[in-house]
Length: 489
Image: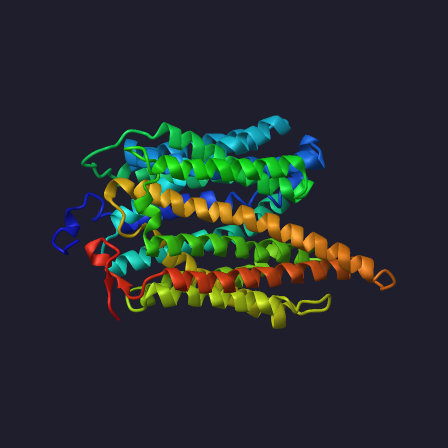
């Protein structure tokens, strides 16, 4: 897009205010995947539900969010991104209020499912608004740097916020806090965001919508179920087989209908495909940090919930700097074929350092440098991949392309959590069986299981970097033209 045309965009003059609004909304959605986790034992005690029920407070949100993202993105294209954004915010706020006031398990888990459904409207609408608001190359890099920082750091912020709220207020405030975020974003969105009219709005692809929603539900639920019931469980196998068949059917439908939910032109572009893969692999590997390092710090090092959250702050700080400064400076100068794999290799290096953890490891000398290196890598990957994954799409595909970015991140997190949990549990069992006479065998087995998970996370990042480098095209994308045409460097 030419410089002369840029100011004519209805949101251009207020673009930095809009970025702040979208950032607040994105932070609310991302941190809600972890902010409740720390409060779960307290909520369980207060409401009196079982250990088996407890997982559904987390799984219910993930299932609704992951399975409805693509339809949420397409609705943003069809109905209007501003309208869907505001509906998503309002619905998320109401569900949060209901969850905070829950008097029993059904009310709490129901609220979490509704939260996930409205998050599926909100997240792709926010990212597509960002995509269509920032068209200048340097400004787009800066805006996606901020957005990518939140996408990568939100989970860690959720751990810290959840710890503070649970310890110093009440577990209910892990839900009520969303009302503050939603109110700020609602007022700002209503005042400053304007919809950009589309030249044409295709009809909704109902066969594709039903098929992909059912397929993603089966996929996320299958991996979640495998964590507790095992991979040989009949329901786990049935869900994963159904997911494969449904998603294969979805792809077939998309090639045959006149108005596909997810046009193949969105995903078959090499740069967007590489960006989606980078987001998937990074989300899968990232949980090796947040999940198992949280276990290590709390169970083996004796950290409180608040101390654990504070321990992640340096990583969050580096991630934010990497997204907003490093990625911004390099995005218009270095090919994403170099930049994104380099970030993934940095994350792999940090994970590899964590494989050396022991019962006596020092936070300052071991955990801190490793997590900061991981933060550096994730910051570069998330900012660069989110921008590249939404660059060059047609205006009426911006919402569904944004939803695809969110979907691969969500599914990657679910897959990574299930696989790493399984590998860690198997490693702990094997270690304990072969070290029966050792002192502190339980603690040693736990730490061994964490280092195995870190090893696999490092492998995910390293292999992902190689594959992504092979897929992405050389050259710097021509952001000014609003396309993914490459400029030689």
